[in-house]
Length: 281
Ligand code: NAP
Image (cartoon, rainbow, N blue to C red; front, top):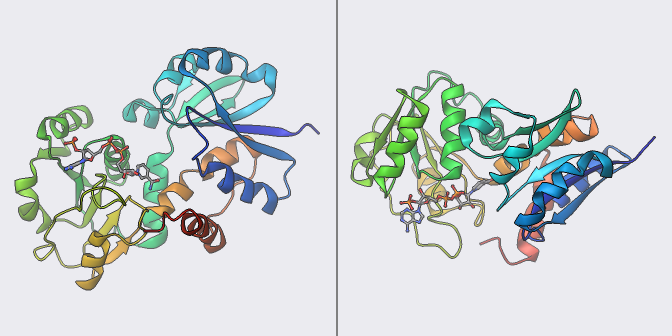
């Protein structure tokens, strides 16, 4: 049997935690396989992708700055990657190279795990931010049948997303946040505010709907000031680490043929690494 190989393609890519995640699952399932970092400059991406079959790659992850560039070399792009405008996972299917995006699966899978039943009777999700993570959040919320209110400092970017995703998505400036929170079943922060080294997210949750779940996609620190404030008010909270873990599941299954599980041990492995690198906040 030949060794199955997968990669994370980026430039730079040494900071990626994906090798740790996939390495853990490879060892756990005793799979004859590898997951390798590939630092490839933008002008060499075309050659790398066209050489994938010959080099024996089963597929891989794609990270900054190649998430858009690889799209033109795929035979097929899945619906999520089309809607999100970025590919983060490549695999072969019936001989075709498929480009997909699993960030929304990570975002929703994490919610399902950490706040089970969150979407029972949920109607409205308020999403702070209008960047890449916001796109994944909007796509996931629409898939689960919620309406979405996007709040962003640059309201024009929120309008672009509302225009792109359709009538269930509306755009708002930050001055509207408190009014929107009164009817929110879910609040998701997808801005970089509150991340270690970034300015704080200033938000008053006193008017947030009772029972609302509060989710921060940031995981450095694990418990952000937003989550602390929400927990103190009795809301269920969800941190961003699980999003990173859950987004990796589908790729692993595509490349190695086993569907891995996100376990407390895996979560602890990454937390230990964050602590060791002084990034735990
Ligand atoms: P992005 O595309 O650069 O978007 C950043 C967003 O933050 C924009 O909406 C931006 O608003 C807002 N923002 C930044 N600085 C701000 C400030 N000073 N005041 C108000 N708003 C500000 O970034 P992204 O890729 O979406 O990532 C956003 C965060 O999500 C990062 O912290 C990232 O680490 C995290 N993330 C986590 C995961 C995970 O697996 N847990 C996955 C992806 C991303 P403007 O439009 O007004 O600039």
